[in-house]
Length: 455
Image (cartoon, rainbow, N blue to C red; front, side, top):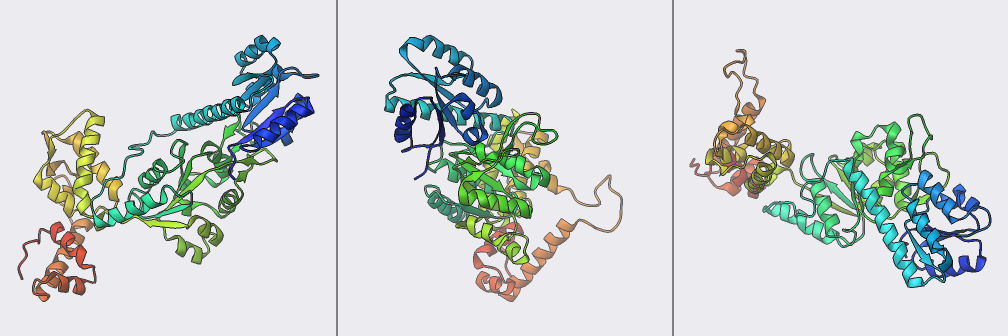
């Protein structure tokens, strides 16, 4: 049974502690402390998600605990238990940082509701802090666009994966939309109300991996000027998306595997574990199975994250989606840039279809954004597309033709024409000669304006 978090109960009365434990342990992991001093020890405090404390205790009381935690653990909510005669003091505790207070004797259902709400607020604050420090997501919750058979198969698998709380591995070239598919899976899952935290593993220096993933305590290393929550903590009750997981160095792979197995981790500078409940979706632009064979990726981690694999096709293998995506980007980016265009000219549409898109959907979006910016008319024209430039144009030095894209394009067209002639115009036979699937022949014919080709 999954727990909703870890509760630390602080009360000098053993009967009260036992009563709270018997009720709370049905939903939460529960720890207890008989005094404020005991509550502040690493054994009790580390990994706690919320604190429930009596107000009046021998020695230091609940107000002092609230003040101490507000200074040292600002993200840790504290709920104060008080008798009727000390309500004023409880309100004073809220002024200095308590999340809420309850009257004794405590109603179990009310306590459960207060704790659940306080935990949700704390998680929302962590997520908000993370989102403010990162780029706001685009199109979260919206189904990634595509009408091709290949893309529909991707989205069918994503829809089947969404309600099942298991690991998902997305494989595909850079720019094919892996993050968008991961967001879609999250938005349709039981964790949709929780955070979606994205980590680009390739962008994290190896020496900062532990701090980024697990967080650190203030003063735990040079430059650690304040406490920091790690991505596993921020993503608690939600989804953690590990992009380019193939870039993780070996020590990092071992520690990620341990968290996936145990649901626990340690912040840098702490000796005790913190519990987390996250769903992990991984993405790779490399063949992970091949990386395992080469010894560059741990086999046990691979088998852990490779429960359900979804392969995303490159954009040149789904040409039917180019026009759909281009139209959507034209509308979206036109609003963002404050420059709405009426559409895309037929010549520009044909050029978009002919282009091989090595950068996939990301490159298409960038091309559309640039085109909107430089467009002089109300329609995006072929002259607004950056890949229309040719080597040897005015302003460039004369010399050998080094336009590799043009050379490859013309070579591909020549091979296609030769195959069609040998096949007598029969596409099935041409596909066999070319060593490609018959369904892809139409794409190449459109790309090279050969739909009406006659041998």
